[in-house]
Image (cartoon, rainbow, N blue to C red; front, side):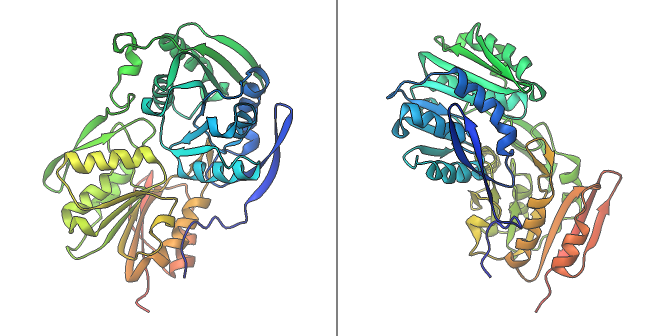
Length: 397
């Protein structure tokens, strides 16, 4: 059976107004709904003028509609959409093509100064203040001195407090407008010398090429995990993964998949128990892939396959003895189980006969029935008041 991303329903297309145009948008599981994202993008479209031929960076681009609007003014060849989330970049490519802008470059990454210089950086506020600082600093460094940086996002997402961060980095900005609980602000990019970067933006992991780290004592080794804002459990090993590792027992000959590898904790531990070349680590986010590679390298591990993938899309030709996952359950600010339920269905096909799935989740998430429906049986290996670890085994025949 072919495996890939299965979200349980056909993608819906809707029309979203930006400026004086309507754009076709795909409603995609795992992204903020286009109607939720529209107010912030619409503020930019209503208050920012882009000249033809100017280079424009849009990020995190999400569904790509703001990039389509930018391409209408600046031209598709001058517009770059960037997002670290592969679901976003896939969806952006689809939406850009649907709106006549296949020439727009779409990159799965975070901004890098070598991508510039851009004349305009249009930034849609991501979730999390540390991640927002990462995007702003690296996006600003990719923007030419004197270029314009526009930030838009919801009050509920922290746009007002983040405006103070932006002012500390860029100087005083201009409030362009507000609507439906969203604000947009514009800044002129000043010269940014290393000595000018304020303290919050100097935290390890904010600037490209730097990482935060924390120690991990496991597998009779003193290990170190390397991470950046936006990567799961960036400040230390989370209790769910700790519980999962306490019941994870691997034989040396096993092939192992770390699904949603984050900063690489599970893949690192697996690589110490089996041949590292038998370990595969995937994540939807390029920041996670970057951190996993750093974690493996700094701990002297060579051999695992580490790649960005939406679920099983990038590894549809492989099968495993063991799949281990601590899956996400947020889409934007909303709790959703749809993606993990899709992972469960696809995991069955990705396992060898007799292979097993180990999944840790918060107690309030209803995964027991979906696992039972796909695998026939399910066991709970460990549980406390917050988490539980499920074990499901694919039948031998």
